[in-house]
Length: 263
Image (cartoon, rainbow, N blue to C red; front, side, top):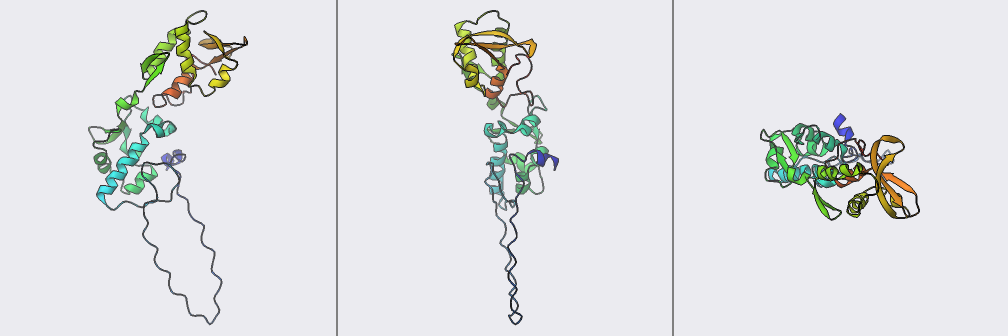
């Protein structure tokens, strides 16, 4: 139950309809009302692999349809679209260096409970065979996003970088430089800055030059400082930009802190 509560943003609890208003009392001489017809069997009221509110869904009766629904739902959990905003899943993935998540954890999610009320692991492992998004561990008890999909290629300053580590490795030496950065280095920083949540605010009147420096609040750390066209200066956290570029590789809860602190 605790795990379900932590996922309420992406997997809301079922809502219930308000009971219908009571019917007006019938005259004393009226015959007794006929018994109400039985309610039809519940059907799946959500689309596997999509987020959104839903009523409590029923289990799928057909094995083939169930396997397809499991595959689609699990691939959604491990998709970039979901992981970008799903801190719980990112935290679970970060618990091991190989990013494995136990099927037992996946089976605590409401939609998986609906598809497999018995919480069996084997049908999940079988359904994910051949997936182009999710990999099953050899023991059939864990899942992870395919490693090849975890590494994203980006172009910054005209150069290609594969994965978060490559961008950080290129940026850190620039923080140790004195004076204004060279044109090629500025091009890299400007492209990186474009991924900052407040890029326009940081740029302000325009960038005249870029240098490495310190934020007054964090004098022991280095950051990049923008020298604006109007003479004012503004620093920024390059790690926040990196986290925005590589949300799947971002350390959970770090928020751009550490070397290169800034705003």
